Length: 254
Image (cartoon, rainbow, N blue to C red):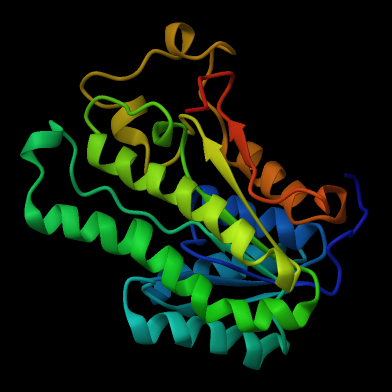
């Protein structure tokens, strides 16, 4: 994309955006011209991310927010409005995976945590943001799902179910919000090298990229960010309800 700032004058919230895929998305949208609000549950992480992004020339600010908490979702949206005056883009990236193992052994508490953060909060934050995205006249929502939402991985079956639910939310909201001129899309990352995916790439029984992934390698967070930047750009102005697989050629359709 070079130095073209095709997202100039747009304001984006990216949840869970101080590390990994979320940080890469925040950086890419900022480098493409958007003003960015980053968020995390920890002040230290927010401060470090904001400093790093500003060092790259990104206009940004950050706030501590746990998207699983009702008041924090409102605080996050209010912060963006107070700081930048409007909201054009919401990237719903926050996710947890407290359970690694057999699906039938997941505890009630882990199931509830997965559902609350990965599904419930994604939908309720969208509800909070929609009135302001509608005012934008060019609102965009992107959900970060997963290739596991299409084809569950061993050991993360519960997490995979939540990512499948996000695909349904994406499709339903794209139809519901179309008349408000809000486009809704998603990406489905494959195995991306981040701290979050370390159990898959570097654990006791790591996945083998050369046999699992047609491209023969794990992905990088920046490669997810490029897909999100496209989806919220005018280049994707007639796309809604779609899912872009960022997965090296892995199966990504039900």
